[in-house]
Image (cartoon, rainbow, N blue to C red; front, side, top):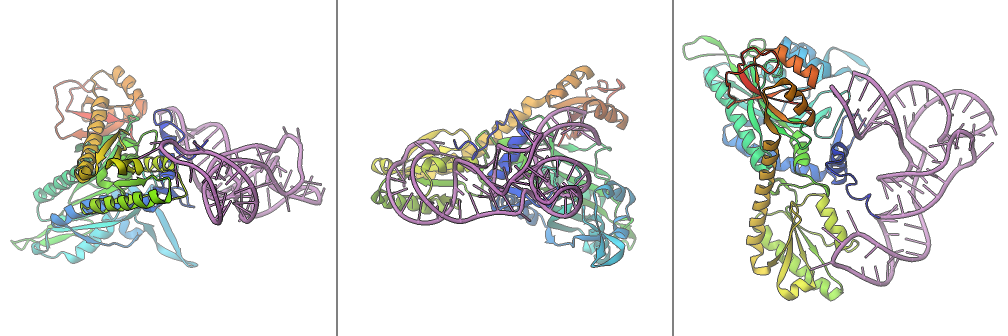
Length: 480
RNA sequence: GGGGCCGUAGUCUAGCUUGGUAUGAUACUAGCCUGGGGUGCUAGAGGUCGCCGGUUCAAGUCCGGCCGGCCCCA
């Protein structure tokens, strides 16, 4: 009778609906009054905070500093780099009035901050001694989504970080691009338990204005690709229009070499899709707002006191290990209700403790990923919980890796390519390097080049489309 | 980009064809009962029927526009 409380559709029957229900019912986010905008609720924001803190530490450890940029950018400034402007303008929100007065140079709500950041950088940078400049900005960006909005995956405003660095040499800038991508990969794989394929974007898919874009891509259970983060080598494409230059050691005025990079709350979307199941969210312990929930079970007031005091004792023990533990002492709902509730919210471990357990000197430990129960003696609580959390983190990563392996296929025949693409997959196929062939594939299958892996082979075969000699293999897929 | 569907209490929903200010469940509050997987009883409180306009004596219901949401296909 309480079927409506939980997730009412199965993940493999209606994936899209399943996803929407999890976002709303696990209280990660809710819809704002404006189309395409969402409100992040505390439970969802807490996941973002975990991710943010992990990445922020790594950035600071590698010499990056945080700053803050305003949200409004004058059109005259945004349009200075023409390809960049042309690429973003269809989805820019414009502020045209202040009060009743029309603004002559209308203001863009930042779709990304290259233009603004670099106009500032040109003021701050005079000498080679000012470099490298490595500033990161935790903020939000706005890009109007007309249709097909989806919480976390496609929203008109999203939380992200955007890093903008300036270097004296091309080599140093390119090193930065790679080191950031590695940092992203490490964070996503270790914290979110999501394996990614790293490589370059094709010319067609690269960031508008960049020399090249590196990316990490992952596959979702429905076979569609999700871009998890990008790191761009901008060369001198922005330093020239925005006048970011310095006097080098030989007293020669030189345009700087730049990079920009970002990851967004899209990662939360990936997390939901990859690890969740028919009962709801499944969170990797590293980013779970609550890692262990204790559900006390009791019949009488006497039992209640005894059970609760033991529950608090366990909580204190675990908190000492910096674990995030919650005791669910609500009297108004039954234990069964609590079990389902916390499973929907994806808490990795549950400890059940009742009078029977007290008598036997143990608790019941239930893991969210497998739903398996085991007895855990009081004296083994700490090591049992710690090792189980570790096991869950590893287990989730392993099963996500298996999914990626399962859905990645080597295909050299175009007919096979088309039929495999219908099923949803990462297709590793030879490509001649021409945009025209990408366009043909996009037209006939809806897929594009997600990534040209760094370790891509070129087996001397022929392009999947035009049959001309291939330049490299690339990963093709449909995407979010 | 194309096509369907939907909006009534916190949530889910009946009523709409054949106009007369609204049904039930759940959640909520109080008191009981119960408690190892969403299970009970009694009472109470909870509503601009998405918004704006039109038709009408009368609109949740009919008509138009707008806003918002979902799903499917590319």
